[in-house]
Length: 136
Image (cartoon, rainbow, N blue to C red; front, side):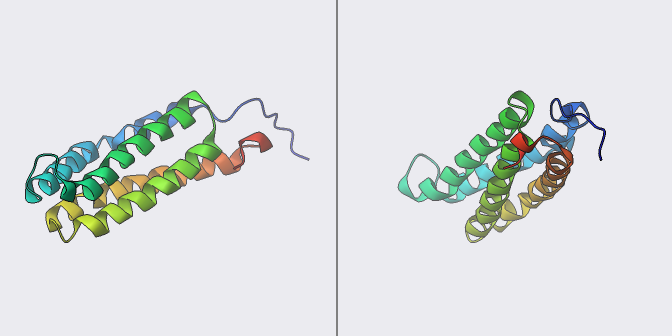
């Protein structure tokens, strides 16, 4: 029998540094990559930009949602689901951006590495939680 008491999920203090885009410049790389795609497709707000930059916008939204789910709602299960969606979205961005600008696609790979680490940590926190309410 386990004597640990479950009152809330683990505190995110040790996790906050990882959440802030890893501190390794991933945000700048993704921003520059989106600029390269925008420039190579002619700039402006034209139809060919809808899918590549629409995915980028959705990725920003999911990234923000993860922070809200994990830090504000204290729900590592939903945060994990959000991260898995985000991972798939960024992987699809790599595939869609590669024919447009190979460098832009390569610049997303450090972000995928950061998402891998963050997903592993979030999974561990979710799994180690004794609260069944936090299970997805």
